[in-house]
Length: 114
Image 1 (cartoon, rainbow, N blue to C red):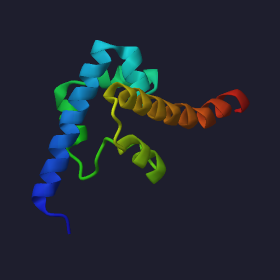
Image 2: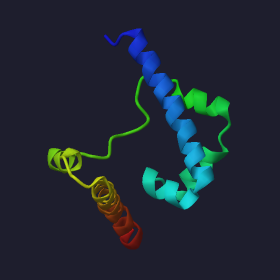
Image 3: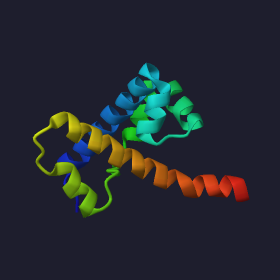
């Protein structure tokens, strides 16, 4: 059984995440859609949601955010030591962007064939 303090932490993280998502969309919608892997319609729905709806959505025992690194090889490449921090940030961005592109391909295929 999950302890109540862990559930409280999950709910707080969910609300913080949703508020960050709204801020990202307001600051730079295109970049937020790319980074968060959202559809434009979902971005519109999230940015328009009042705090009461965000709180309702956040009040869950499931995390709303998801780690995008799904394999240990990618994880190891991202956390390995590098003497050049700028190169590491660029490498991380490229790896994560590649995950975005791969994830989007099946959805695009359905649109063209469905």
